[in-house]
Length: 224
Picture 1: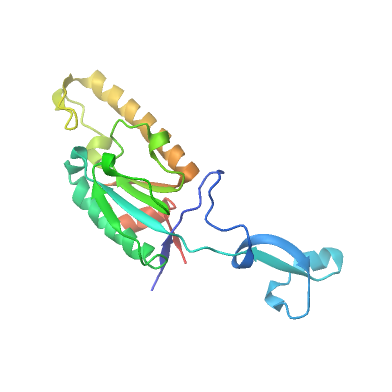
Picture 2: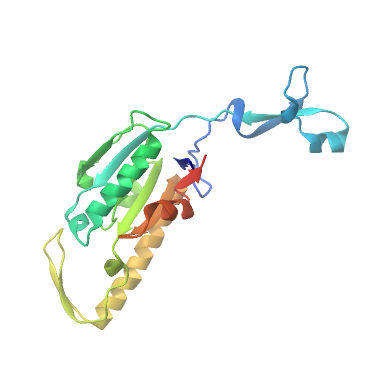
C-alpha cells in the first residue's frame, strides 16, 4: 500500500524547514567526517574516497516528526458551488495522513476570523477569497490548500448581477467586468501561492477533481 506524508518544507528558499539541523540518520546531508571503526559501510561516501583516497562517513540530519493543526474555513463564500463539502473530504484525507506522524492532530472549523495562533504546521483549507492581509494572517509554517469551483476560476462571458455573500454588496457585470475579475483573480492566486510556498506548501484544488493525485502533483503530499 502506498504511503504518503504531508510535505511541510518551504518549496522556495525561506527559513522554517522541517528537518532539524542536528546530526542523526535518515534525513538530509549534514557533513562528512573521517571514517571511524564501527561506522556503517552503507554510509561511506565513496565519491570522496575516489577523490582523496581516504574513507569518509556521510552524516545526515535527524528528521523531526511534524506537529499539525488543521483549520477548515466555513466562511459564507465556502458554502457556494459545493466548496465546503469537497473541502471537508480533502481535510479528512489529509488528517488521516497527518496522524501517521502526529496522533494528536485535530480539525478545527469556522470562519477565518476564528483562527487562532497555535503550535505546529497549520494546514488551512479555504477558498482564499476573504479580503485579509494574507502576509500577516498566514503563520510562518503553513500548508495552504485553496479550494475553488470551476465556475469561479472560469466564469462564463455574460451579463449578470453578482452579490458578495460576505458583504451583501451587489454589482452589475458585463464582459469587461468578467475580464477584469479574471485578471484580478489570477494576480491574487499568484501572490497567495508565492506567499504559501515561502512558508510551506500550496495546492489549488478544483471542486470535483480527485484530491490525492492533485495534492501529490502540486507537492503537498510526498511518498514515504
